[in-house]
Length: 90
Image 1 (tube, rainbow, N blue to C red):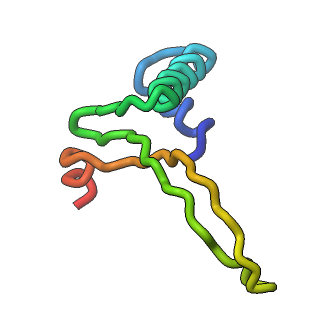
Image 2 (image 1 turned 90 degrees about the vertical axis):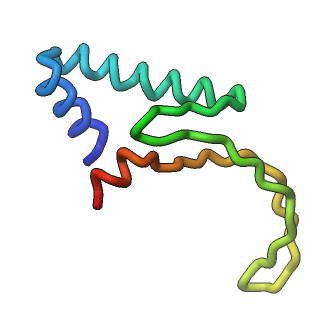
Image 3 (image 1 turned 180 degrees about the vertical axis):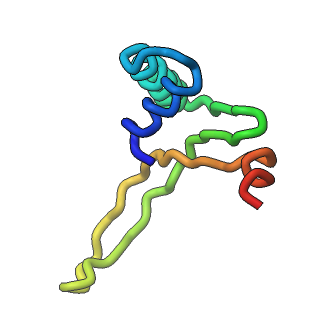
C-alpha cells in the first residue's frame, strides 16, 4: 500500500473527499515528524510507538578499498509495534 492507496482507504472509510483525506493523512505525518524532530516519542496505544534512537559515531570500511571511514553520530527513527497490532497479525 502506498500513500495514494492509504488516502483512498481513509476517504472510503470516513466518507471524506479525497482532498480532505489527503490533508488528514499529511497532517498526521507532519505531526509525527515534528514531534520526533523535537525528540519526543509518539505513542499510539494498541498500534505502536515512533521513537528516536541515537546512533553513536563509529568507524566503517569502504568495501572496495578497505579504507577506514568515520561514520558520524545520527538520530534514527524507529517504530515499535504495539500489542494490538501484533495480535491483529497473528
